[in-house]
Length: 252
Length: 259
Image 1 (cartoon, one colour):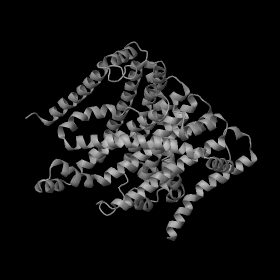
Image 2 (cartoon, chains in turn brown, cyan):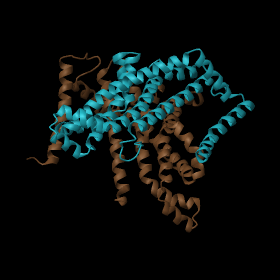
Image 3 (cartoon, rainbow over the protein chains, first blue to last red):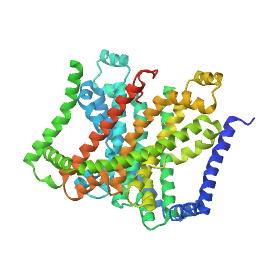
Image 4 (cartoon, each protein chain N blue to C red):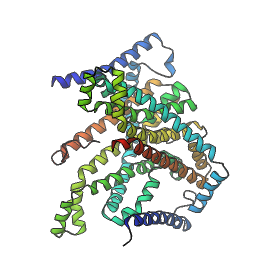
């Protein structure tokens, strides 16, 4: 009997090989026209060209930078505002219904408003990324503050802590798991909105690269761009999951 | 009762105050009229669009695309979720493939869908189906893993075949979680459909938003935006009510299975 962990790896690799094999078969028999689906070999050649020769690197960095900038800015804003709302039950009573109403609103729907106010530029994209990725972290922070252990709240009253001291000594540390979960969701949203912003503005980035490839029927470059965007999503997700683990290690 | 009333009263105060402030501000500073509009103008434009049918037509286009994509994503995702939830080898073989494919942002597929299908419903619902496939796959898989082992043992003892076991035991046991997957995915489908319309596809509410902006009709643009908020909120609210009605009597942790 093979050890379970080894079997996981063998089957995991097998799964990916099966996927690549199917992809190869579908394209080599032209079940789907190559105009829409190039073979894996052509796609990886294009990917190699893009990375080794550097044609796709500036675009990749631009998208990553846009995503991270917007996300960091949004996280700071969200944690600050979320703490202020979360720390007071009165503020929650007045503001939470509005927040709940805004939550299901598609973040991309703010794009036309942002174009009207900011103009069709990189500033608009950054604004939209920040605006859209504020919500998950903001709501998570409010939730984290609202669910602080009641006995800790009593302790803070007994110690006559100020609001500010409560936020930093009790509220924020207790909300950390919620905030991190919210920030992970926010990062996904940030990537999506960065790409949508690029599709609309034509600013340098993978979204624009992918759109140009599609307009010029360069399907291999199109798939290479999609793969790179997938890798960005995968790496950022894993990075944050690792960070979560380290930061939350004290919680056991 | 009075407490609930007071709560809801306080919840309304903030949005009403914002609207009143916006109205007053515009009454004294009518400069921004090409980019933003006072609430009274938004309401007038919204009602005008409601009565000339353009709002309902756009809503219909968006909802049809979202629903078609959701249906494909649901059927494919639930089927795949059952496959990896029931067969251990399939689960292990698919694990890495899922990890690799799932992080691909759905919007990255917009140019591909555009290339493949051109403008129209197909490119929109294909992107929606990709986006909704994953939550159904993951949540079905989780739902099956959380079925009480004793239920499966009972079905074995009763000599159920695999099909009967799925139909009589697993599907009903997983149903509350599957419905939660549906409720979450409905919201996602609406968001993705509108995003596709804003980024590329010239139809539906997304087009309405973009076109109103281009035609310098901020009243209409904001009316679309608010309508979209109401629509998303209402769909979620009614699905939540429906979910509690359907499953309140058998979810072990009380009525709400909301995350």
